[in-house]
Image: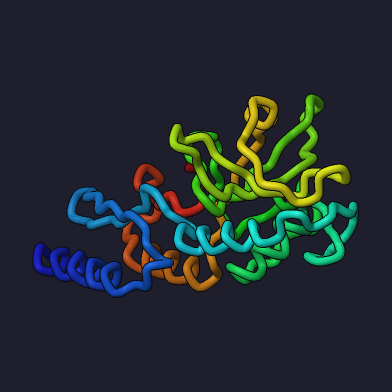
Length: 211
């Protein structure tokens, strides 16, 4: 049994080391009795893709805001801006509205703490009634760690890049880190293939849990 466990860990380690950089994630090997149980402690969904996504977003600064628009040249609104860029860089087809993106998107990792945001994450905001009304992309951080967002801000602004203000912090609803379909398929296969004691919820993988 000990040899089998050592071999299993070696196989998992080799798989991790040979994965492309965009699939980087931190894996913790927990041991429960005689079972070696791999579980995810933290995942960089599209950390490397996130930088490319952010770079693309900044190319469209100055594009007009058009409510209901879907064009990166003629104009678009906040949710279309995020939808198009996420589709381009991850292959994920998001819902059309900010509300549905925040509530119905499954191919992502939820960020519930503002301090855990990274470049490339989508950030969703709610108004004082609790309705989700806006979405932006995190495209950088200043020297003090405050994020910059790029978004289709409104008719008077178009697509802009600006530092997060207290208003946005107060309206924060959730962040989304989008992983490519290929990345998530491999991660799930790697975890569940080697997850022996599925009835033990204490060690259940945290793949789709909040960060």
